[in-house]
Image 1 (cartoon, rainbow, N blue to C red):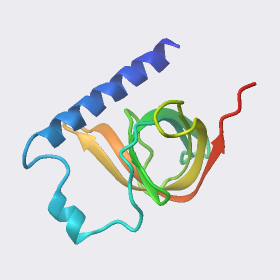
Image 2 (spheres, rainbow, N blue to C red):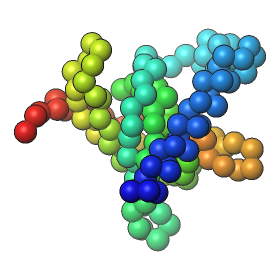
Image 3 (spheres, rainbow, N blue to C red):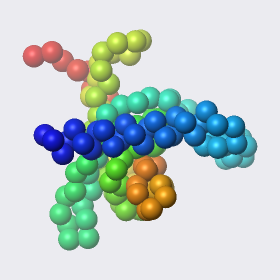
Image 4 (cartoon, one colour):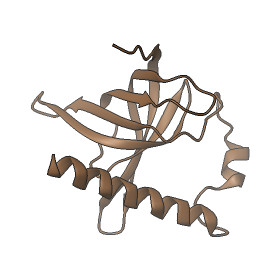
Amino acid sequence: MQNSTKAMTNIAALYRLWRADIATPGVGANMTDALEHPRRYHRYQLEVPVIFSWKDAHKIRQEHKGLTRDLSVGGAYVFATTAPPLDARIKLKGFLPPGGKALPARIFGQGQVVRVETLPGSLPAGFAVAIGRISFHKWAKN
C-alpha cells in the first residue's frame, strides 16, 4: 500500500510540472503543432486514474498506475513514473468517478504506445497510446 501511495504522489508531481509548463508562454502544449497535425478524434482534457499493463521481453505482465492528461476514442496521454516501452501493446483500466455531467463509468482499453516522454535524468514523465479498442461500462452499485 505504501508503494502505491508513493507512486500516486510521484504521478501527481508529474502532473503539477505539466500544468506549470502549459501556464508558461512558449512552453508545453504547442498550438502551431496542433494546427499542422490535427487529431482525428477530439481529445478531452480528462484526469482519470488508470492502471495499465503490458508484457515485458520475458512475457511477464508488468502493471503500473498513472493519470490521464487527455483521452479520446482514438488515444490518450498518461502521466506515469514507469512507462511501457515504445511500441508496447498495453491494456488500460480506469474509473470515471461520479460528479459533473458524466455518469460514473469503468473504462477498458487496449492500444499501442506511440510516444514515451522523459524528464531530465531520463525519468519517465508519461506516454501516448493509440487506442485500438476502448469501452465504457456503467458503474453499477452493488
